[in-house]
Image 1 (cartoon, helix red, strand yellow):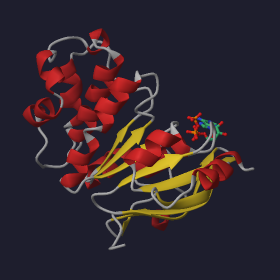
Image 2: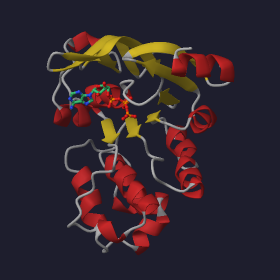
Image 3: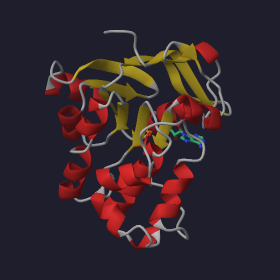
Image 4: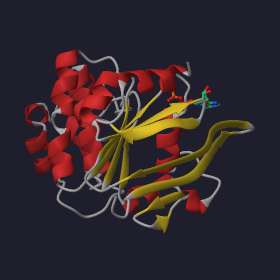
Length: 235
Ligand code: ATP
């Protein structure tokens, strides 16, 4: 693999005294979709939050972005470097319109091709609903707002936490169908995904976590169902 865009080197993470990640190592290249899979509580969200700076990584050099150590940087600085998180549960501002939610995403980010118009071009349904409160949208449309808000910061790496949770399969397919257009522009995407089949279909590389440790990683096409099941359940 060429120089990875994101590299984790022995990443630990803690909630107080509780250790949630143990020496996780992984690499994701520019223009790649990687999926993190694993059972409830495996540490998937913790991994994304630690990369995004919402949980402090204990060591600066445990997270390298474009070769620069960024572990432990505060979240707003991480966004400024070009990493955006689509959080689990979307976390939209309910009293704000679609457009206002999107504009908030642009405040901390970098300069780049993403703008309101670009997001509306990417998710045309949002243009029609731009002045509607975000709570009036369907779940799938709300997820598009959450992704659009992250894109407004012009990320080079987009971290998506459970974007398919609670959505109908047809909507999940619609959202995943947009990822190739993103990576074609060189953006890397890391998705945390409960649906293993979806993860294997969408991602080039898959990481399986169990109890805070990487128990399997490889190209999605190289991993057998048996190997994934064994890693996932630890059987
Ligand atoms: P899920 O699919 O349920 O979201 P996950 O793989 O994303 O699972 P995490 O949410 O990263 O798992 O949780 C990893 C571990 O850290 C779990 O044991 C969880 O109980 C613990 N944990 C998560 N958040 C906190 C917190 N705020 N305080 C203390 N422990 C936490």
